[in-house]
Length: 118
Image 1 (cartoon, helix red, strand yellow):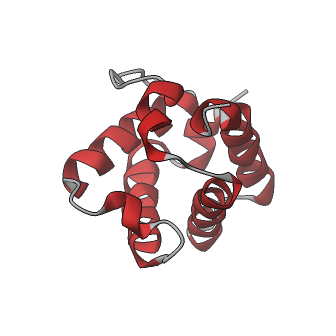
Image 2 (cartoon, one colour):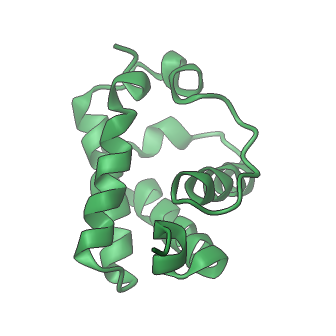
C-alpha cells in the first residue's frame, strides 16, 4: 500500500502544500504572530522535512521533537485548531483526497498534547 506521502504526490506536493500553508498561516490573525521575526524560508524547509517524514517519505528531519519545539510558545487549543484548519484547507485546495486529509488530521492530533505542552 502506498504511503500518505506517495498518495498525495511526494516531494513536489509536500513542497507546494507547505508554501500554500504558510501563506494561509501568515494571513491568519489567530496564529500569524507566532511567526513574526522568523526566517520563513528556514521554517518552511524544516516543515517540509517534518511533513515528509510523518507522511511516510524519506526521513531527513533533524529538528526538535514537538514538545521541545513548541514549549516556549504558550499555545492553546485555538492555536492548534487554527494550524490544523489551515493545513486541511491547503490540502483540500490542492486536491488531496478527504480520506488522506483525515489521516493528516489524525497525525496532527497524535502530537497535540506535546504541541500544547500538556
